[in-house]
Length: 104
Image 1 (cartoon, rainbow, N blue to C red):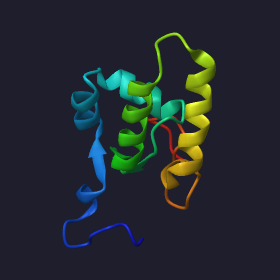
Image 2: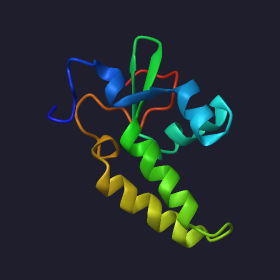
Image 3: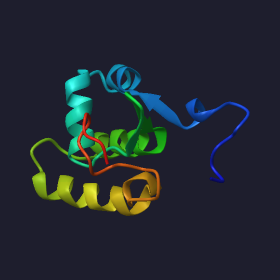
């Protein structure tokens, strides 16, 4: 847990579904689909879904760099992001594979 500043709490490294939706200018249901597809690292504390800021930033940067309609490049970028962002590698306590609304 070296990346967490415990004086600021979990909010220093995470975002809520609403914050991610506002940042990406999409709906919360789109954020839910990104989580379900494993494109954003997240976990739940009771009913609250927390999303890794690092995975949101990585997703945003990749989407800016990929031309629309290039599915092969999008798939390649998705796999690179999963390898690079700790929250998407199945780290303990991170539930990137379970859909929102389901328990791990």
